[in-house]
Image 1 (cartoon, rainbow, N blue to C red):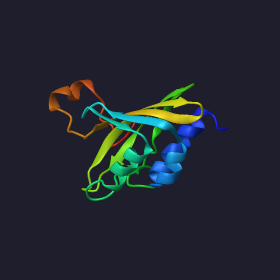
Image 2 (tube, one colour; image 1 turned 180 degrees about the vertical axis):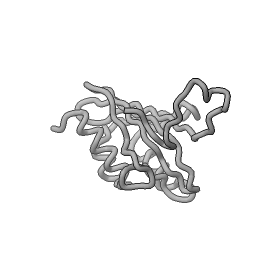
Image 3 (cartoon, rainbow, N blue to C red; image 1 turned 45 degrees about the vertical axis):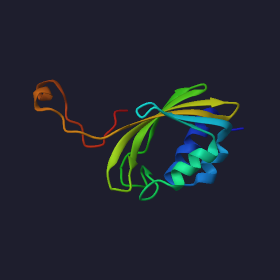
Length: 140
């Protein structure tokens, strides 16, 4: 059995390739995903697949080294709890930041809590207090 970090890495790789079957092999039978921003809870692989296959305009793509973003997702965590940060490119061409809190149980991803955020321009008043990072850059 793969260690938990490897499970997360395999899941993100399957996401970047839009390989739904590979993703589902890494999910527990009682998998749950929550979108706190919209108040939605997705129970089970079938409902998750339904969302992916019926997304208006086509499936959003994880933006990674092989995709439109130069940065691969960043994974932090240990044990049975991990965080993955990255970007998602939507069918309309917009690229948003995404954060997923990942919980693993018995060698499978049991729960995802996912947040999505559109990029925005930094307000001018903060300029004296911040460093300007490259667009889409993530601190390491």
